[in-house]
Image (cartoon, rainbow, N blue to C red; front, side):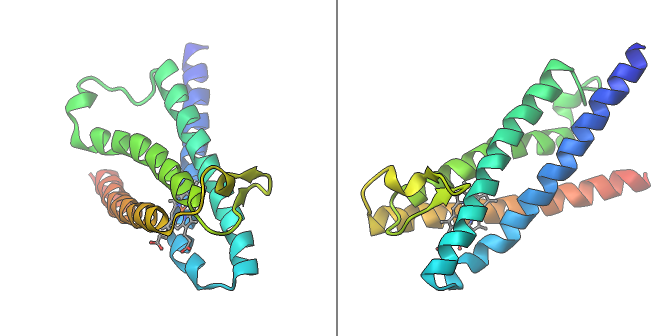
Length: 162
Ligand code: HEM
């Protein structure tokens, strides 16, 4: 009984992992193209991008809670294993990235509504300088995430062969 319960917990964790991986990759790859569209199309695309970003934020909190409360992926000495630490770095980074996204959108000079109704652009007055600063930070965090995703992929495929 205990074994089948644990199996179910891991199945949920794995499903959440792959769903998160899919939408994170989507935002990481498509974000760079957002700037190149006319404003009316850009508003729709950023509505989708920001909605996915908010979903990633909520999903990471849920995943963290799910893993922690069910003590998943905690083999003895896991805190000293570089590959486990690499996995945990994603949690704070994937919470910070949507927050930076929201901050830069707060200063943007057009309307951004996540899911079509959360008006993040109304949070603060337009400010091109602050918008530029946080957009730059958003881009840099994205590069860091891309590097870590590649490292994580290499690490997991290496372990699969050992
Ligand atoms: C984990 C979640 C997210 C990821 C991985 C992500 C990724 C990216 C990437 C790679 C870019 C391109 C950066 C650049 O051109 O320098 C970008 C741009 C952008 N992101 Fe995000 N993002 C996330 C969440 C959000 C959220 C929550 C919002 C808003 C609420 C947001 C709003 C924007 C906007 C407005 C742009 C710039 C569009 C432009 O070029 O004018 N992002 N994002």
